[in-house]
Length: 488
Image (tube, rainbow, N blue to C red):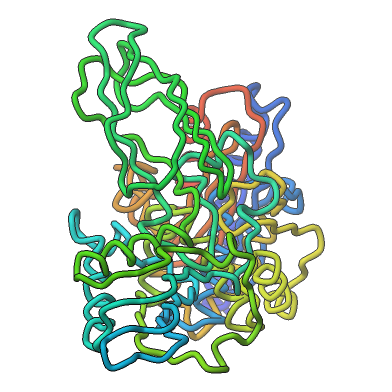
């Protein structure tokens, strides 16, 4: 009897400690939600115990909000699940004519895009080596004995469509590097680097010196001025495929070579142009120059199953490596291309719309998609609507997946790596929180996993939209909630 009483007492103490811990987390989110700065804000929060499936704490868990880059959790998880961690997107080279004895190709070179976002990417190639792949391509063509091409070098990204950018992207984003849209052919991260010289006085004009890569027929309207600022305070404006680009804002004084990053207007044509230039440097003449399928309106279904001969296949990087960079560095283009690749592999249609359709089809079999609205893969669209419960459902599903360890490894660690290296630094959550962050004007979010001090495995998500205080202040307040979970 004495032993039984001791066991009952022990059970009561454990239960009381659990209740207190649960109350501590719920109290933390309650206190957070009642902050005066959030009187007009939307807040969605949930934390669940992955072992039991029980909810630990919540606040409006089903409120669907635009949550910025935490959206990338869906695109990376979907790519790993549906494409496979070892899948490598491809870019293929074809010829469509006969090579005569004198080295004349009576036809064209075709670059068939397969959504490889790593082609010439700065994340996989060191500075100055982004064009090395073109040497291999040109060498392959030269070894075929080709000296003259009577036709053109065509860029063909038509299997991914020409929609430019996903629904809900703002005009103010599109011309900047983070607003580079997905495409069947990507090159140099679909990024246009612009190098400026600035003046010595406030308000002085700036001068555009050069760009990388060189864009044929680019018309640049420069309204950027010099100012007593630190860093880049300029903005680039321009729609997809448009060769008109506008800049305004300001850049630091007395700069002889200041780099600003924008979006590349037409990656499909750009790659055809780059290969044409490389062939010319090898002494191979391209009579009709570079062209793109979009410009020539020559999209033909099943083109490559006819008389076209495959001469080279360029394999991109593994999905696991792409997903890691997507989450660690929050690369919008990579996230968008992952969505498109899902659609391409599943149906042959590499559009954002088809990719999102396949993603919803896959996850809807595992949890409810009610109220969830995905319109892009990166979170740049403000028409996305995702609740904390949706994120926790995704994270729970991935915790049960055979790919869980791969997915887990793609996420930044609080206080240590990626976009959350400063989150909970030197606090209880440091090293225990593995998550994706999201940041846009008046939006802040986090979602991921927590290994609590007591050994519990937790999935959590928190999004705040339309707050009145600074983003840094919101993070400071969020850390109190996350630290409470870390010691739960």
